[in-house]
Length: 106
Image (cartoon, rainbow, N blue to C red; front, side, top):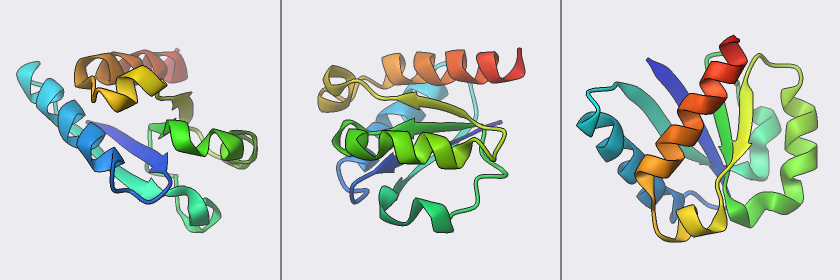
């Protein structure tokens, strides 16, 4: 099972993306553990059990700091595009997650 964390500003609008990805995964008979967390305290979080971290569009200003911090973990990092985020494109985000997870393993 893939374990995914979406880092976002407050976790409110990202919950829509989480639900869209879960729905897309269920339609593909895939299991996925996905949730969102505020990026404010990302250094206090444990990413050891995480496969993929996605950055929501509203925290792009923190992206460099987050990427630098996550170098200490074996985790794939990606960003959710503004279009996919705004329209809750669960299939597109799930495809991105799968590609990132494959790159991590390969």
